[in-house]
Amino acid sequence: MSGIILKVPFQTSVFMRLKSGVELAGVKPETVLAMMLAESVFKKYSADLVITSVSNGKHMPTSRHYGGYAFDARTRDIMPTELKELTEDVSEALGNEFDVVLEVDHLHVEFDPPKK
Image (cartoon, rainbow, N blue to C red; front, top):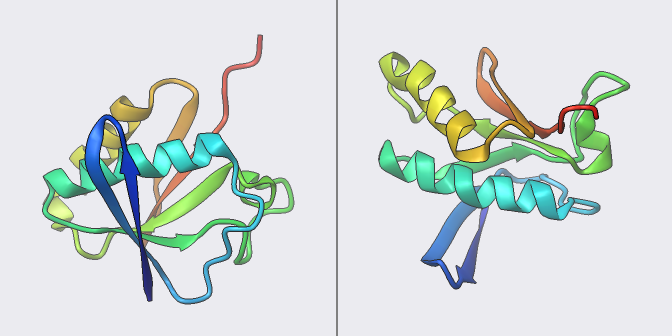
């Protein structure tokens, strides 16, 4: 597992871990921003943001993962009683251009702005 620390002007640092084998090639800026904001929410729950999939892994053929617009985050370090609230908090932090879905073993986040 590796870690990334980003220095950004509005926060002292962002720390997220990557599961071994996670591929970041082709990740879009919107996805990176979502990761940074999600990390601050995970921190509220005393958990590291661990990215388990971006463009790698097996997903539906139309998945936003393959275009670099989605990521999955580990949830096993969050208390089961807090998962719903975590999902809502991440969704609120990201706004209506992102879908945030609690799956069985991870949180799925994708950039999916409303169609105009």
